[in-house]
Length: 198
Image 1 (cartoon, rainbow, N blue to C red):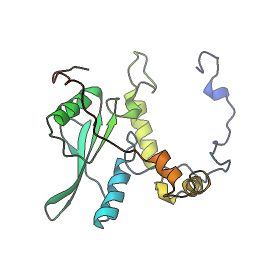
Image 2: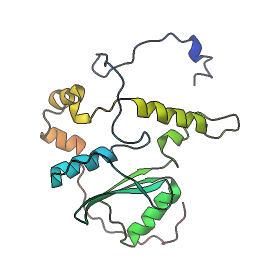
Image 3: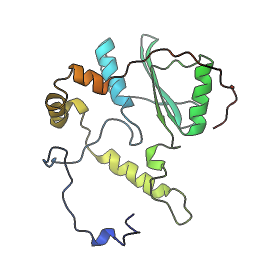
């Protein structure tokens, strides 16, 4: 869009970042975990503390099929308490769906991203002259992201203000309606073929 309008980054005047409440943050921050994922690491640490009283300092990923299909586990005394997975790319998603149909998915949470390599490797990113993802740029983005300080969501004064002002409290009916999902079993009208290809 910038190219279509003839806008060059070097010609644009630098301005402060917008802030949802109109106040400038002292610095950019990031969530726990790798740059391409959502909040899987944060959820695992929070669940470990809330459900089992365990403080998790470091999360170790175990690669299954490839680096885009990994899992993390919380174990105590040889027993697996929680098991999460990060699944990136449609081929790995298809593998996950096949395992789900066979009842062989032990995960309490699966983080799914359609782009192989995660969001930083997605179609919205910069490409090289041949139209491929610029791997050097992706690596640079990973390094910049990793250098930012971590700020947990529950420590953000902005999030606390959002809960109070807009959601009327953390456990309010409005917060439950806006932020929580309820699941119910649905009968399948017909069974999909097990060899469906995406």
